[in-house]
Length: 460
Image (cartoon, rainbow, N blue to C red; front, side, top):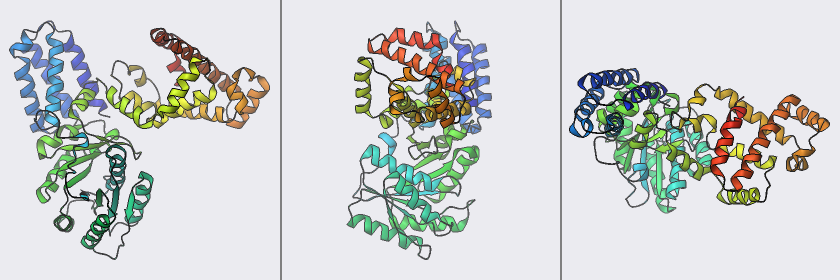
């Protein structure tokens, strides 16, 4: 996510950290690099102009000039100004977690608008899952897209996967009638929230705008969210602006941000449209929707990582009771191949290696830049296959894995015996570190991990 912008700004940040003092000259040079980085990222020109003006004003201010570490102070200014641009210059965030206004008589109607191909229907399901998981809401979805083939069935399928309920509609009905019937059903069956999926087009046209405006007037949504593809770059901002001229948008959901290395839309959308960015799509999975946080996004853009996001990801995916049992087991000296496989699976549930590395600070993730993530993920799946080809006894007691057993496991998992040996060696390294961990020797464990290169082993 945002690789090009992060890399270039990261170099700028690294160069200014060591500056003993800030002058007009080195500040101008730094601002030039930031300007080039933002232009490459397809950030809107008015945004770049305002951002640089604010940074320059504060960079040459008394508190930075007199600072003992002006370079580091300047890094803080850049981060603060990036965050201010993204959340519209207000002090703090735009609202509560997720920034949705749900303070109304149930059901709270949320209207989802956008062009075809932006991932609107999938985003409806993602938002439903987020509302169920984090806000403990009873959610109903309905499709008013009577034009796109299988649009209604698609929403039904992803709604089921998200754990929400779906209101049946038919292509022979009128969109406004569908929405009104869904609201009536939601009221009678005590739903907290109704998510209304609307029809899109390949481009903005008068018929689509009239239809979505009529829907808005009929259902009176408390939230009207515009779903737009981040990979459109500056066009994403212009499209959001055009929609906002026809509809009173309350927020934007930027999808496919994981596939956009530029990131200009994330930086520009609030400043240009005046509409807050409320959620970002960070993966194709149904739990790949995150509330937008300008401060955390600014940190990630500057290569500072997002450790808080890693913690939140762990809370979503880790079974705490199972984790407690594992800790108790390790303290007794027990960590077998089944546990090893569970740890690998847990990492995959958190989005895989690439997702984890993306959230680490740049200086911690440098090794990842040299790693073929596709090959790393493939290697992990092969390791899972090897362990799955073992008997319960072999997983519990790896020491019994002699030549004949290894040949059988290799044949069963479609790998060479050498790969079995390499996987066992990596398991033994982790087993040793787990024993050290159980004794409370965290520092020694981390040193051992670096010395033995366990991470490199997994990525071969």
